[in-house]
Length: 296
Image (tube, rainbow, N blue to C red; front, side):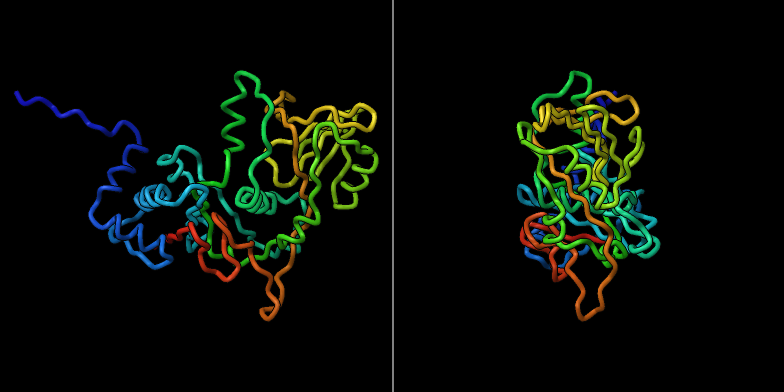
């Protein structure tokens, strides 16, 4: 009786090294790294996500693979497939189905777009500590550095985003120990379209109870809780909006409060994002260290 050979494939992620050893893969990866086109024949369905997962491992440290799909409806399915081949889920850069001007700062699509821009441009807030069973959840919700893969559609890339200058002008950095008048901070939130509510339920809301200010930014998965002692920020933490339990304690956080922007005329169209490692180039070309892949 012939002994059965033990398989090295124990999970979907184990398929990625197999793709690396496939004929022609190294040449295709080098072509993408040089900003040139590369084609892979015979891929469809989840095989496209597998190929993207393999190419993502060829990006330099801090780099991001941008996967552009022709249809908005394919984005979530592709991202779910790709998650099985990666050690962290890909980020999704979503698209509106209507005009951006019809939405406000609390719109979930707008929040998702801002979140990806922030991931590409800014490292996450440094954590102080994480509570036992919440540690894995906090790590999943805020991976260190830029995402390995961003999945999007051509429609999403054609829709405008606030410029980097506008985002920076609408950003406030809050640090434990800062002196800050809570009333002034609440006026700033109201001026930018936030609603004051008794208890948070959705992005675009804030609540004040005694010396505790809860804020749910549009680009956040979990809201922030700022505890004041007089005018001094005593603590900052993320918390679960349903259970009210602490997710992560922070030394510092950034609040970016901007509104969706309408498309400019073609002669004055603003850039999508600032070019740079792991970002989307303003001229539509991949910046250094970023590869692009499409799905047929």
